Length: 453
Figure 1 (cartoon, rainbow, N blue to C red):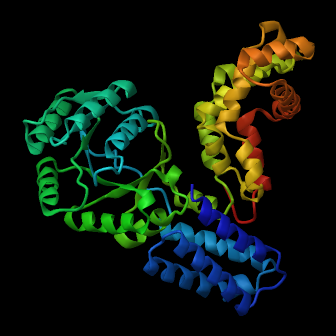
Figure 2 (figure 1 turned 90 degrees about the vertical axis):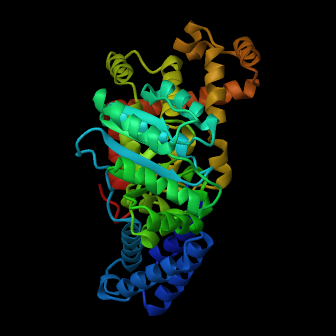
Figure 3 (figure 1 turned 180 degrees about the vertical axis):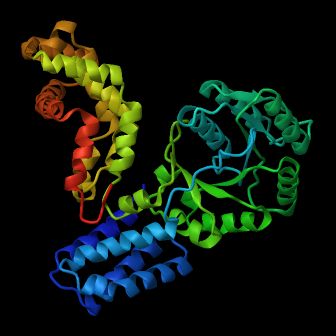
């Protein structure tokens, strides 16, 4: 996420960090690079101008020039201004209103609106323990209604049926009435999208809004459209009283222009960000954490939260007890760790949030991927139970059998055993420190200057 922007900004800021003194000239040179990085990321020009001017004013003041570590002070200024640009704090949904709380979802066709409705429904059910109902008012696409019904079944939330013979307003008002009867906490209304903004679509959604009086009106927009996303959000905001924005497909957005432009242009907060296709791939938007990612400082806080949610506590406790008894870490345990990494979103998700990884060569990063994790898992699955528990017995003929059974080469088996030995050493350290979560918390002292918890 935001790879090209992160790479460009990180290089500029890394060069600054090593300077013993800063003056107006090298600050000006650095800000020129920052400006180019933002423009290449498709950030709207007025946003770039305002941002660079704010950083310049703070940078040439005593806060940076007079600092004992001016390079680090300027990095902190850039991070703080990025945070302010994107909204300063995470804006939560208003879940304090009288139920059913109605959330109206608007957006253009192809923005991922229906999938986002399902993601938000799952997030509300699992993270906020709310009962949720979803309904589709897209009477122009029967497939959209069916898609939402299927997703509702998968994520175990209530689905209110609708069909193309009904009017969107009738569907929405009937859904609100049913949600009230069933004592539903939150009702999510999926609306029809269009390929472009038109008067007919705007009139329809205005009528919907007037009929149901939603607590939240969220605009769903594809982040890969860059500054166009912010301009489209502005047009919708002029027609509807938006309460927030959800950026979708951020995992495919190497630039970051939408995230940096939306708040400034619309004045509306980004409330969530979609980071994948799965219904679990929705994160609350924390400007400070995203700013840290953009400048290459990672996002350890989100990583800790994901670890605490995804890691099977019972399995983790069993492993700790096993290690305390001196039984050691075996390949069965290694396979469990691989599965848990997959549950946390895979290697791409983990690497996106780890600090300092922008300094690792691209060739090295490319070798660590989810495909490789699945290969390791396949190799372990081809072993017998006794081999997993005592890897030292795996020699020549056993290696050939395991390689054939997993569709790999003997050198792949050798590589796995080498990685396992390294993992064994890491686990010994982790067990002394209290597990994965505490290991991540231990990164606090190793974070770049200015990044705090």
